Length: 251
Image (tube, rainbow, N blue to C red; front, side, top):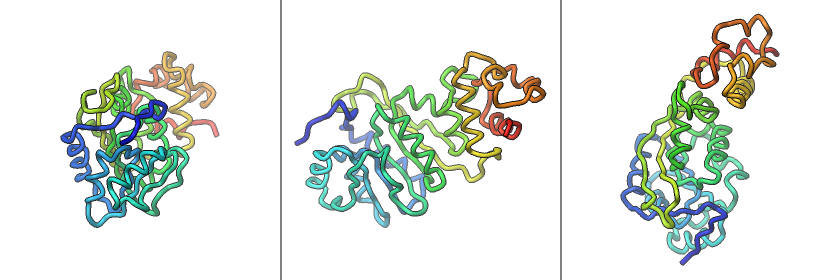
């Protein structure tokens, strides 16, 4: 058998119905290459490895889990990248899809790593802590709308698929979970540059209680800051609003 390691945020899926729903959610993603993040004991892997006609790989840091996985699923031999996902190089050339029950302690970091690969990641089906999933999928005007909402929704269509009870895991986490599906947008809202856009969004939300004028005043000239949109707070701006404002930033 295997041991569970709290330091790695390990909460393994044991509910087969949940596993099947996650795998079924991939049917809306057209792909020939698939990467699983954190396969653990293989609850999802045993279904994923059976998908025909694809190049399948998994990233797992824990040596014990890698050994267990290969012992239980011999067809996984040579398909497991034993490394920290946050440090791994892009595993495929060209488009690929990502799936996984993401470790909660690094799920936001996983999301930002995926955003770095957004030109090649066509679809993501991932399990997140419920609060994180709500933030990623939130629309403007809400309290949980923030950096991860804007940066993700600028490049992906986000679907909040379903919630998962603590009882579906071993050991049960202290929080509820939710599964998201991200599908890469065919048309991205024009922005001055990704660097400018990211800087604007992060600066605006780092002082989200202030008006936009006070939060981002170093990024614009006084004439631009006189615009009424700067009377708003960051959470009141849509993705398109941020993208349009990026063109007016100081060089």
